[in-house]
Image (cartoon, rainbow, N blue to C red; front, side, top):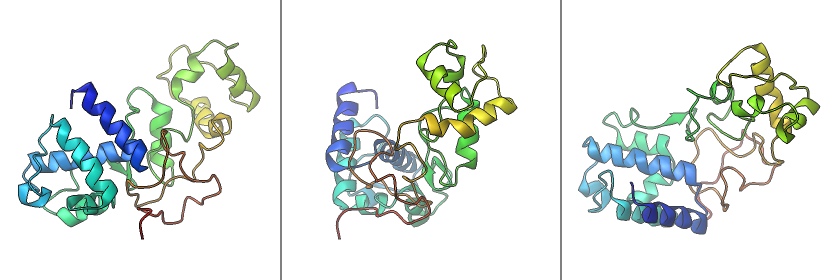
Length: 220
């Protein structure tokens, strides 16, 4: 979708309905690719044309997911469960890591983030550690001073480097992140109706264990 108006409306709908914007966006990408590949049809979508570029369809899907109506009832369970329901190889286009939809923070250019994606018990999460560019900032910058205080002392001219100290930085840096940037906010089989927030993974109390199941909808 290239329409800024449609994208802004979609973001507003997610925040209004309490949908995680990353999981919901990746989910709608997934279902549109399934539609393009013929895995699902107009009969499955209730007549909604889910070809790429259809901003109106994206916003319709936001509403259906929130209301758990029609195909939205399947998608509210998350990409993994939806792919299992669709069959026909639907797992292939799903953008998942350990059942969690991937954020658009590319590990190709942030190697320590890629490492965290791989070893997190709940999969890809961009708030579980600081990102590689932080250690390429000047030593007296607020971010570097904060990292130095927790023992992540090494700076890098090349933010793409990955060595033992960068791994240590990735391990330590959740302590320097925002108070709720901890492994509480995901589950192995997440849905997209998880709580209310304008920010990714900050919609649950910090005390919620990562290993518990997460309610996929606030409705009974």
